[in-house]
Image (cartoon, rainbow, N blue to C red; front, side):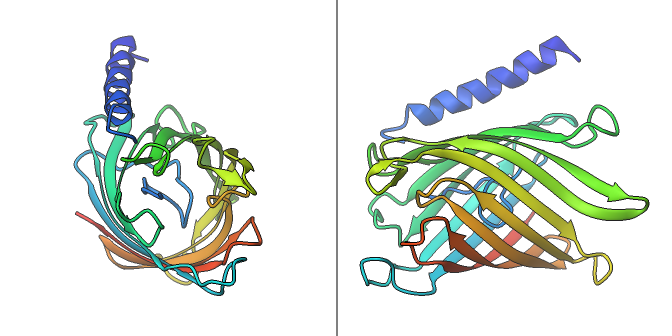
Length: 253
């Protein structure tokens, strides 16, 4: 591998990360995801991605009040002109989180696509998301790494399985007032070619009993080459939190 290539890529990622850290202050700004948690996929160079997500509570929470519907409008773009190393940067505007006075969040991710260095090479990504603009309120600063690989048996696709780990701000990622700011990331996803090349299903998991910890079930349908809709159900690891339905519209251009 070209040492200068990796040094330049690392420098770009480091500079962007420092730029995020230096914002005034620094809650679910979305990099490329599955249903809920970040994926090991990264937007290719000059690919712009718009997402509009809705999370609708199915019931009251433990305080016997109905949480607000959370909405998220985000934009992400690929910024590295390399075949074997991609990087995306993005921002989101969120409402219904309880801290709507500070609605802007940033994210970035860098990764190597599957097969970049041989047939068995997995896709690998590291990134940070939910970098808010208010210290001690929205600076969740969730750092993660993830690795994924396509699986098959004979000529049958078994889908893609991925695993990773995340860690966020220990002052904000809590359970019952105690620090609960890290955990496992895992996902199985598959395009259901037996039915349609446009149909995708996934089971997505993020650990901890903070507000980030969920098991997510869903499917997506691709209406055109650049437009898809995800419908899913989010089961929170903390049973005191109301589960949510999610609808997500994704457009690439």
